[in-house]
Length: 219
Ligand code: SAH
Image 1 (cartoon, rainbow, N blue to C red):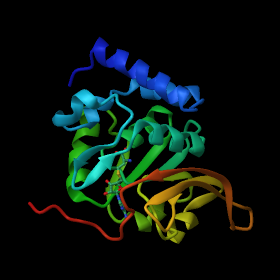
Image 2 (cartoon, rainbow, N blue to C red; image 1 turned 90 degrees about the vertical axis):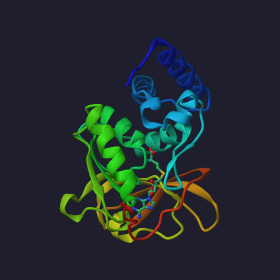
Image 3 (tube, protein in one colour; image 1 turned 135 degrees about the horizontal axis):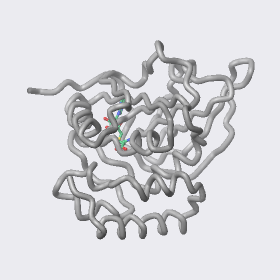
């Protein structure tokens, strides 16, 4: 896998686009400048890797648009060493950004094909410290709870109570939530008495759905 000056130049432009769309966190912009997004795309879409768009990654899923990744990550307010749970590993791009920010990343994917493919990729590019799980994200990972942050990268139409239980008091959960196709980006925290409090209501986004259960490989 090659990363060229051309790729770097395109990433610089992408970072400028993100800045013009309101992303202010320098650590996030640096991570997005550093990470070659074209590694995470199928060959057919590689040349479009630095457009601010979502692309198919197989199994009817998509790699999130760079703006969405930056927006969700900014809402999460990640600090170094934070234990972060991501739901919806997909291509692994969002997980890799979190790892570059110094987080200890746990990520769950329900599509076995994508899980296998992304596990290989993350190992190959030296991000094997990201802990990946093939399971239903609605269940979270109780044995590693509580998490400083939980980021859901699929559109939820029902609230994941079990995941909220696995959030630390004062932690942040970023979730695209709503009953229709358009999901509102919410940032939720847990108060001292264990209650849910919405701390930020963001913009609307379209996502692939947050589904129950797993989908095993057919091979
Ligand atoms: N974060 C990803 C975005 C992938 S799209 C990236 O950076 O590429 C959302 C992903 O969520 C899809 O791969 C989909 O299969 C997955 N997903 C949906 N419901 C899930 C669930 N219950 N548990 C785990 N993953 C889920």
